[in-house]
Amino acid sequence: MRSTFISDERTLYNALIGQGVAKRRALQLQNLMEHLHYTSFCIDSTAEADMIIATADYPTAQLSAMATTARERGCTLCIIAPSLDSERDGECKRLVAEHTCTSVDNRGYLLLFNNHLPKQKFRL
Image (cartoon, rainbow, N blue to C red):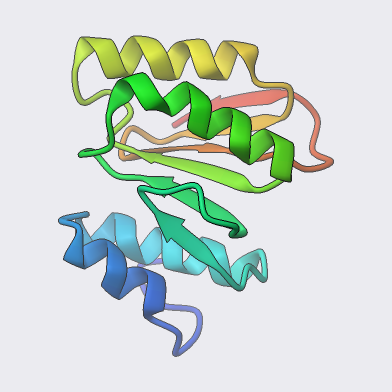
């Protein structure tokens, strides 16, 4: 992941910083959104968007429903701080095990892609 922005767009970055996400992680997610040509995101909600993001404040008990919504819509789910505590860690591991597409866990966030990519698990 680059340590600089790939475009002048900062909307997601600024929103994540406002939610207390680390600058490095916010920059990575902004670049991911640009790289994938996503045009929309939502934070701590399941509004229609290319990327749905659950911050560390989002209730662990609701992550499964959020994952189902993302899968049904074919959008990417990003869970910030997947290993925040044992309950969240366990739930995220369960979601990855059940996920039918590609997942990427870099400890700062977990990405569950819901597109044409094959089932693959990456833990960085």
